[in-house]
Amino acid sequence: MKQLHRLLPRIASGNLITAIPWFWLALFFLMPFLFVLKISLSEAALAQPPFLDWIQEIEDGLVTIQLNFGNYLLLIEDDLYLAAFWGSFEIAVISTLLCILLGYPMAYAIARAPQHWRLPLLMLVILPFWTSFLLRVYAWIGILKNNGLVNQLLLTLGIIDQPLTLLHTPVAVYIGVVYSYLPFFVLPLYATLTRLDTTLLQAAADLGARPWKQFLTITLPQSLPGVIAGGMLVFIPVMGEFVIPDLLGGPDTLMIGKLMWTEFFSNKDWPMASALATVLLLVLILPFVLMRHYEQKASRQAQES
Amino acid sequence: MFKRHPFATTVLLLGLAFLYLPMISLVVYSFNESRLVTVWGGFSSKWYSALLDNKPLLSAAWLSIKIGAINACLAVLLGTLAALALVRFSDRRGHKSLAIMSAAPLVIPEIIIGLSLLLLFVSMERLIGWPAGRGQLTILLAHVTFSMAYVSVIVQSRLNHMDRSLEEAALDLGARPVTVFFTITLPMIAPALAAGWLLAFTLSMDDLVVASFVSGPGATTLPMMIYSSVRLGVSPQINALASIIILLVALAVLITGLLLYRRQRQLPHP
Image (cartoon, rainbow over all chains, first blue to last red; front, top):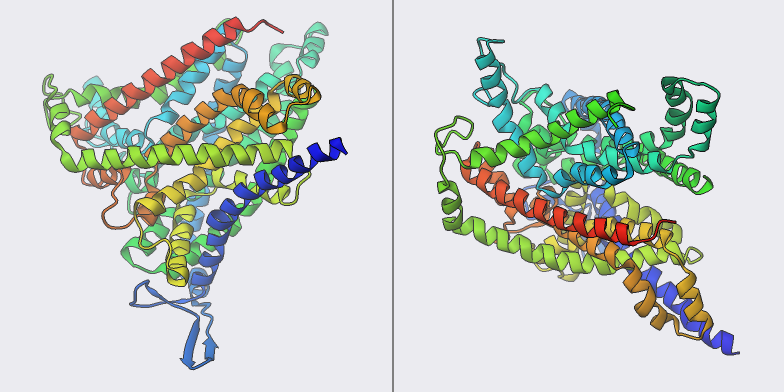
């Protein structure tokens, strides 16, 4: 009886602890998507807010429901939207690969560094993340513009005699994206690498495997879940990136986030912006599922070893 | 380290240079006399004094600090509850959906979060009249929603790695769960709560996209102010502002690093 007396408040508190964040997220994270879906099916109008509700009351109690699939049709018909999705996809894929190429050796070097070096090195990788993202992207404008640092350096060294156009090109967007998202890839991969089982490596070394072979046959496959999870952490947000293409990209850098911003703020076409958001969200479900799967796999691996 | 892994170490050094050179250039050119930002015209600190006279920018900064601090407190509260629910009460209803809902805001593009929350706020205002209009309150609600997800991840990792024997001992000796939580669990996860608070504050101070959607007239945050200035081109005042932020962050990270380092050295090696 005494046990039960102590158990009851515990059950109740567990439910309450789950319920509070659950309801907050249901209201402010899940519910909003229903409104995005709803408004994507309505028509844009010169009104406040600028769309027509699908449910219109004509007379007392008599309502009509009018769904408008026009926005989705336009998405397929107009090449602009398809090109923007493709542009975002291309930039997200290439930047993710660049982050892997640059970030993997970085994470590996930190994970294999002497114990007392790891924390300071890790701090160095994280520090930029704590300073303003917007200002770090802004820094690249000064570096890449026509009379910016890169061009001044190359001109002074005599490598070029005409300034290169770097700002407002795809190159600038790639630099900005890799620069901003690199820490997001290095951190989780570092965590995976430090938790790897080292007995296999020792065995391989004892049997005379060369370091490169050890890396390719043991460390790399073992760390693959961490690479995929970290890669998705870059890929997913970059698909919807707005600030980088807006500040560093040119008029020909089509990305879905930038287009959504224009539809919403410049064209005041809320339904079209919502339709774009709905499609982007659907496209991102698969990478999200992949990320969750490999994250769990990586942490299971760590618990086993 | 270099001898054992020459390739990886070289890439690490190059990567760190890539991360830091832009920030260093921001600081160097904030002391430039010339308005042309990247053309050196002699040393000057005039942009810092200009910054102090820029009233709209200062009030935007104050608004961001205010929203950031309240956001951080609420996000730590909600994020800790979410982490406790996910780690300690995995048998409860809604556990799986909570796990997904609290992981998704970390990766979902900000632009979707911003748009969807604005549509929610507009629709809620029409249906129930709350929140009336958009401004500080709606920015705060939006920021808490994505910040709590980050706090939850940090606190979860701490809860997963902490030693539970003290808690169990206290429970066996008849302490009430609430007492155990406040006298044992809370002090043990306190570093994670502090880290979560700082992260939530930073995320809020840094957010342009979500705030642009859910803000209304009269609530201009610091990133919104910076963005409208940056769109017009480079400005030495922004460089001065960036340098101050970099200095503050570097100091904070340095202090935290030293504290962590000392803790690590005090703990006996397992």
